[in-house]
Image 1 (tube, rainbow over the protein chains, first blue to last red):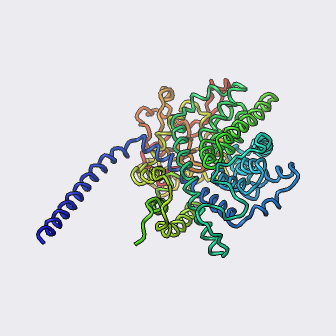
Image 2: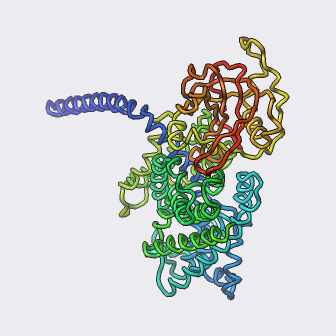
Image 3: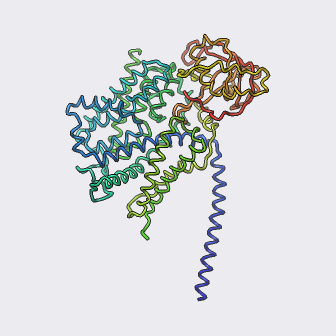
Length: 340
Length: 259
């Protein structure tokens, strides 16, 4: 009896002591955090970092819901039926999907990888992924506004964007012929419910909805990781890059293109807003380089690259990035040489 | 009681945390610091989706343990902690963006087309002694974009016109030698990450008294000035506002302007 009482007192003493300790530690932690959070750099970093995440989040959620829907409700067979046999028509259709599917580049990655896992050929899937963020009404209209009604830039963005997407898609299809592009966990084994999360195939609508939500939340975890990393890197780049230092590089026919392409990749701007940023370089940078910025940005950037890494093999991603850079460079160089 | 899956529990907290924090930002209005108002509807959709995933997640907390790396979850906590702890204000964005803006080069201050009706007539609220605060001048915060668009799109026609606008001051060494300063606003097209500084060059004999980032309301007259732009190696004419009156003011509630 005595020992029991003693252990009870012991326990309460330990409890009180630990609560007190945690409280004091907590206060100390918050005080330390206060000065950390009040730092100007941290505040500035936070504004940009959080704004990139909050901007992408709705579209990522939409993307994973669509992707999970496709995974559960749409079979490989159906996909095989609707893909046109003629390669050219297939690519053309894929590049025009943005007109009916105006999705941000963040949402397109989960959808595209799901399509590949369902058997959509690489060239069509890549063209789809690259064209949708450019050739869509929202982006083209904001480009029109940003360039004060200079319709040439809107047309160049739309046409070269479409052509670029088709070209890169075709190239990726050829060089990846026969190879496996997806990492293991994204393979679909022929029928729609093959994921390791559950073993029985749910046939009822309710069951399928449950599966879909299961998938959605896992995908959010997968893609979200890379979104946050990408946003972090993009924020750092935004803060470090001094725009005025770049202005002197704007005149060279080749250098300007390289600078703008790297900027587009590194700043990771949303394709609705990048036109306004591009506009600020008009006059100082060659027109070709500005168009390169306008078509490369929506196709690939740090954020996208990291998100693609969640599903595709690194070799595939590197080939993709190189193809995009080369194609955009060639288009821009042609523009600068011709003198548009 | 069933075993609790630690990973799923933390994910539950994360989903709930994000949903709540976004809701909180919208309620308090702080969201306008980060995003364009047009994005609000998308964020509301996100909250709904997050709530659905959150409710669904509750059951998953009791699911069996799987080989999942808890460390990756820390990544998700970073933005949450920053959202909760750091309380940025509009100055934070400017401090970061200013690094990239060349104040001397007015070509970086460029014109955006106006897609709204210009209402310069409102500006005859200029009170001559500047001591009273007529109600009309409170509306003037909205005329910055209109004025900006009109003056930059039709510079020649606007010469001699009077304008009244609110903005924050940017002081630049080279400009202050001629008693000039910049009156600016932050333009947000989509989110804070793409915000840019836009504004007018202003001419005022007491420019030396002004401080960086000070908010002022000015009334002035538009005229043009030409200068040689080294970067493009050409002469440029830019509009400049000759200040007639200037008074200190508070930062308007909507400190960003939108195209």
